[in-house]
Length: 367
Image (cartoon, rainbow, N blue to C red; front, side, top):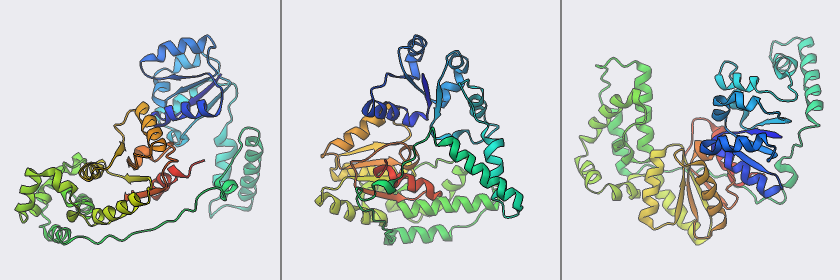
């Protein structure tokens, strides 16, 4: 029997792929049916068991009571911290064979890559890499996009500059002119990040300043800044209160929304299918309001979407022509999901880590 450990966000995607590409008896050890499925596993009624890191952590003894031929770990960066509880659990999990990766491979390679490495450390690092490649060759069949690059559609990357609207410029300038009061004892670093968060919201959509801050630590300070700013724009505050739906969906309060409106109209005429990513769920709320106001048939996937529902959304988006736009949280939907039905990816607001954005883009070019 084989055990596959993966994040909950991609657990059902694993099952879907196994059902698509093979004839395996697969079970999921998670949720309310976990105990019943464990009985089936003990009775050898399945070949592959899927579980999450959290379930494994809570039920380690039950998993160790079974004999696993091999354990496959997806998104292995989750166990990179040697002191983390989940890393300790993974080390305690019993399986037929185990490779001491750190002492045999990781440490020699790391030491050999340092700029202060001696000739001996360089040679040792190279030998460790060669041994690792040889050992892994019997287990891993690595395939990259280069093998099928002629079959993949050409990817064009475009960075579009979006000017702020006049109203955004006025609000932006007002934020810069607010008093740097520090009567509440905030550190300079806290002030910097608070103002940076406010300016980022202004650049995305002014109405985001009306939404509650997600950072409890900076919530009071950001609210104080916003109160100072909007004291100069009472008409906008009143409109946001009386007609929040119209305000959120109105592109004139966001330069990005103006450009997005034109882009989506172009995609609509070409019958393109669009993945629209945002790092912020508050921004997704704005985009959702816009889609509703524009009469677009859309789907949304973020951190609150249940794992089973995610696969349903992906399948529906890939197979249904009527659904031509999917709003996706970069962190929740940027890993493991295959949106192969899409041909356009839009990053509304990039994350601080470019690797997250690259992962999001590859949702439609994954192999």
